[in-house]
Structure formats: structure tokens, C-alpha cells
Length: 160
Image 1 (cartoon, one colour):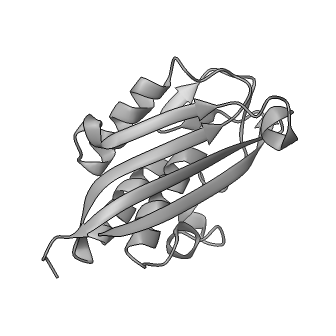
Image 2 (cartoon, one colour):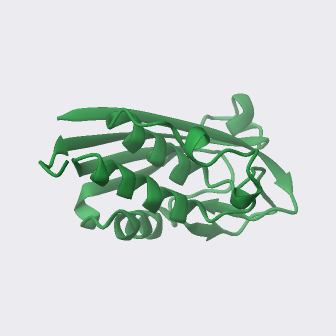
Image 3 (tube, helix red, strand yellow):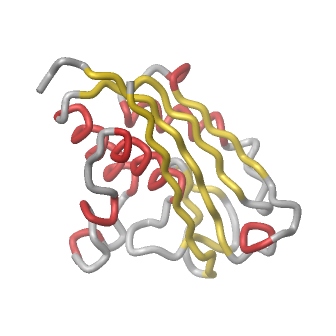
């Protein structure tokens, strides 16, 4: 068994959509990023890659490469999961937390969970997404940024 931890954060700005876990969340600001800025998908990808001891998301899809400009982060997550499987690992489960005071995300987490599970080719019972508030503290509390954390469990699949 192998465990990986992922983290991502993005500044929130006007004129960008807020996409989390592949779900477009209605809000007046969105994540500034080279890709679509989906901090949740990025954190999960890094947790998976980290558990497999593979290069992280930034190394695989560098912001310096124009091919990844405005990329769909769920596609990047799917490619990361494929790399993990190619390295000989099976994904056991993923647990993720989004930290953001506004907008409230509780009504969107089930859809995020379903989209992530589908992207990773997992049963939804193996994916969990939680939304937490930071009670007005820091960039996630003052509305200037979003953060996401994730852990992933892998097992050796014997396919090497």
C-alpha cells in the first residue's frame, strides 16, 4: 500500500469560471491558473502521482508549455491516473477537502464526487469530497483564493 498527499491553491479573480472537481460553480470569481484552475482536480492528481512516486502535476503539465493553457483539469487528472496505473498501481480510494468560505459548496460536492469517480474509473464509494470553511481567516476566508487537499491510497496491481 502507498499513500500520497496533494495540495493546490489558486487566486480567485473576476472574469474566470470557478471549476472544482470538474463542476462549474456559479460565482463572480474563478481560479486564476494556466489551466482551468481546478484546485481540487490538481490536488487529487498530485496525491495520486505522489503515492506512485511519479513527477508531480507541474512537472507533467508545466505552465511554461502553451499546450496546457486553459486545459481541462479533469483530463489532466485522467492522464495522471493512467500514469499511476501504467506504473503498476491500482487506485484504492481518494479523500479530498476544498477550503473556501464563499460560495458555499455543500450542494455541489456530490456532483464533484461523481465526476471525479468517473474520471478515475472508480466506484463513487471510493471517492470522498468535503467542503470546509476557514471562518474568515486567510485567503480562503477573505475570498481571494481557494485551496484543496487530497490523500490517495494505492496498491500494487502487479501490472508493470
